[in-house]
Amino acid sequence: MLVSSIKQHGNSLVELMISMALGLASITAMASLVGHGIALNSSLLAKSRLDEEINAVVAVVSHDLKRAGFYALTSDIVKTPITSSNPFDDSLSVSSYLGELANSCINFAYDRNKNGVFDSSTSNENYGFRLRDYAVEIRLDGAACNQSGWHDLTDPKIVQVTALKFTIEKNTVQQVKQTRVNIALQARLKKHPDISRSINTSILIENYE
View 1 (cartoon, rainbow, N blue to C red):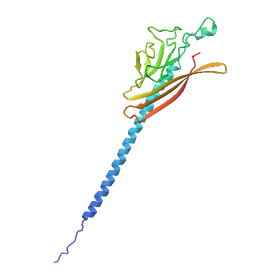
View 2: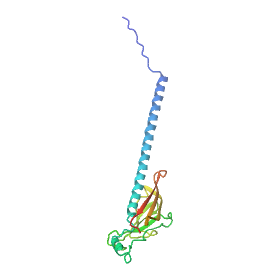
View 3: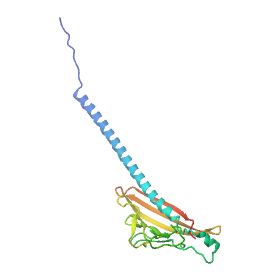
View 4: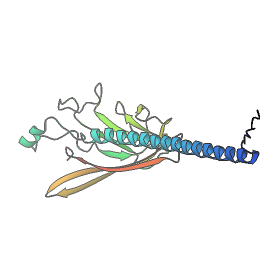
C-alpha cells in the first residue's frame, strides 16, 4: 500500500525577518508612546504641584494682609474721634532685604489679641512677608526687612520664588479712602526650572485708614 507523502511548507527566512522587523517596530512605537505618556504625566504633576504651592502662599499672604490696621476699639474712635486714634494706622510699608528685588518685603500690624494696645514685646503684633534666597519668609518678633529672625514659608529646595513685589495703592471711592495691596509673585520648580508660574492679585485692606 502506497502512502502519499504530504509536503509541509514553513515560513521562509525573508518572511521571518519581515515579521520580526514589524514586531520590533510595533514594540518600539508602543514603548515610545508609553514613555511619552509617563513624561507628560510627570510634567502635569509638576505643574500642578507648583500651582498649588504658589496659590497656597498667596492665599496665606492675602488672608493675613486683610487684617492690616485692625483695631478692636474702633468704636471709641467713632465716639470720640478727636481724642481717640488707631495705633495700627500707618503700619503698612514696603521695602526689601539687602540684595533682593525692590518692594519684595511688606510690613504691617493689627490688633491680634483684640486688647486695643499695640503690643511689641511678648505678643508682638508686627507682621510681614519678604523674599529672601528664593523663599517667601514670614516675619517673627517684629524683625525689620533687613534683619534676621524670619521663618521660611516656602521650601526653596522644592519651589524657588524668583520674584515677589508688593505695591500699595491709595484712592478714594465715594469719599471713602481705600488702600489696596497688589501682589505679584513668580516661581519655578528647582528640579524643573523650565516649569514656572506667575500670579497677580489685589487685596483690599478694609481696616486700614
